Amino acid sequence: MRTEFRKNIAAFLGIVYCILSLFVIFAEYEKDIRIISYTKPFLIPVLGVLYVVMSKKVNWIYLSALLFIWMANLFFINQTPEFIFKGTASYLVFWIFIIYLILVNTSFPNKVSFLIAVIPFSFIYCCVFQLVYENIETGVYFFFINGAFMIFMGAYSLANYFIDSNRTNTYFLICALFFTFIQFLVSIDLYYVSIKLFRPIAMLLFVTAQFFLLKTMLLFENKALGKERG
Image 1 (spheres, rainbow, N blue to C red):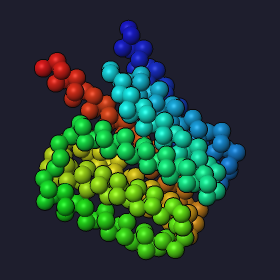
Image 2 (cartoon, rainbow, N blue to C red):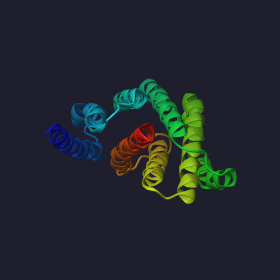
Image 3 (cartoon, one colour):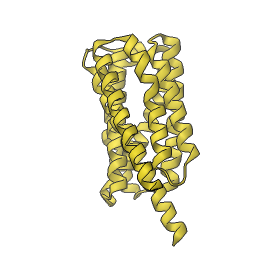
Image 4 (cartoon, rainbow, N blue to C red):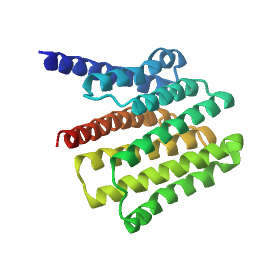
């Protein structure tokens, strides 16, 4: 009975997350700050509650990561240099937590595969930097650090996927690709040229990537619990 109740709550929260996501994507397209302010702050909390409901053993590091990405979302609502700086800093802390969890729960891939996988992600970031470097100003250091994290995560996920294309590595690769594309779109939108579709596409990728990241964390948890029982 309790398991059925948790499934129903999880299904309800999943629907709420999807509805909120659609509102935020629409608001980003219309650039309606009022709707964004009323909906975007609730996205990550709903995802966090969904994780707690679905989890058999809550990972507090993951919840801490969600806290920082939630803060980043709040800061990014205000498109001023000060708030963009704070949002980028919070986003960086989010990635520090996530990469730690990835390294703890997976094996490092073959070095040759990893170095080959670094090439496409490095190429993407070099192209983006060529377009935006004149306008980044004080955020250049965060751009490089976030870029380094994303290149590492992208190469790590791609190399692991080539070695073993299981469900966990597939979900993780989807996350890495989506987050890389988000960084590309947001950087171009902020520092080079703003196109109306960039923000809603970035938000669609963001909510999808966060959901797959949650699924990845649950798979890590199930794997760890299986080892404990074994």
